[in-house]
Length: 372
Image (cartoon, rainbow, N blue to C red; front, side, top):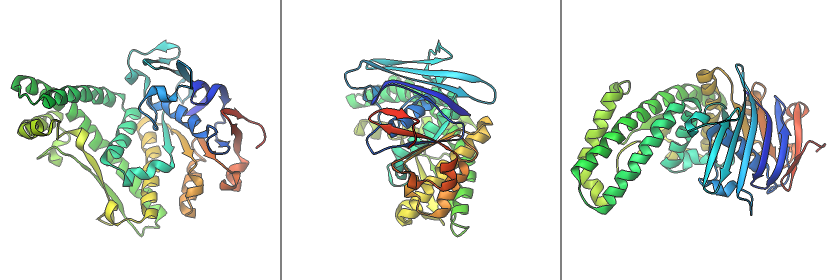
């Protein structure tokens, strides 16, 4: 899978920018604050429908503008598509081959990317919300139906929490919301378990390679649903029944707290190195290697799921990979997938990589392919 052309209008600090990308390696070079990360953010939004830096569309619209647009021409093994996102302060529109999509879930899934950025360390050091976001964004790219269940779950969760905050126990209404949460939540939990089961194979192998087999990386999905056994994971209805019982058992506590205390929105990913909790025992270097392993595992997972490699986005990370084995893994991956790299200096690039890269200069919201 490759992104052939990119067009940005009033996006962040880009007024009207058109680019033709190389199918191999593309390097955006420039000082900090010139717009390199903004370009990668736009590419990511074409794939997952939202930014990794903000939850508000108005934040990506240029100052004093009412709207912005991102358009990309994507080529895959089986089709060529033009994807377009139009963003306003009051909403958005999404198009595939000039046809407006009625739901964002119909837009997401036509284009897959993997972004590796310095803030990925939050996958290890951050809150459970950071790890859930990682899972949700990856599943959304490869299984759009997952987003259907997630959006319905979040809507029911919002309504249930509003009811809980009133402090009024309405058994009939709580029961109705519990049923909705259980049905959609069961699909979410099952797909998360299956996804992480596959991802673990790839991530463990990557980490083993980086550490020369000296350390074993492992992780487990931690569900907040009581009495959910491994045997239940293949049975959506059984998960739903178990989840609904947990919601019922927690009603008194939920009313006291004013929010729903059990469900996929409370789950986490427990990370282990040689059987010990990563958050408690891993060094900074080990934590960074774990984050890298998870991202590189995404690439193989997507290939396994859709039959094509995604586009790899590296946002100013090569200078941070001081372990040569880590750098070599990233660089070897760039030989088989289209790669877009941001950097402040070409000195961060290996000579072999620089020789085959299309170089772009980024300055004040203008990207040019002049000699850097």
